[in-house]
Length: 191
Image (cartoon, rainbow, N blue to C red; front, side, top):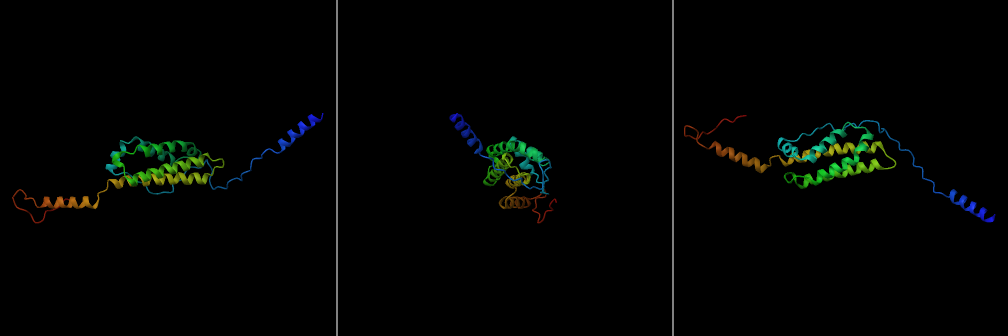
């Protein structure tokens, strides 16, 4: 009888001392996960024709651009569900960067996109999810993708050296004799 009493006492003692889960206070937010993402940026960046031609052959870029466009009209739940895909897509964007687009600035932008997608995924997998944080990072990701496109465009902008060379070529052409064999002092330019 004494053994049964001791056994019941031990069971009671250990069952009472179970760890109680710490109650996490509810997060006060302005938004809910059913709300749609409102893009805070009013700018839209379009690629220059030269950049568009190179990026058009880059499958990872097309996939990332499509995913960012889908993100712009998503609910908080959709954003959380697609966060893992975003990480994989941005990692693919980073690792498959074509040599024609490889520069420190472009690599830095792909690194930022990958990091932001990682942060979004981490926020989406937390126990205590905060919709405001998730919407903020999703907006940041959209803005950073536009910054990435700006950086791609900068690769194809003419540098001052190229501009000077182009002017020199035009000047040399203007010194060439015309059909009458004379060198005109001034030629009219097509505007």
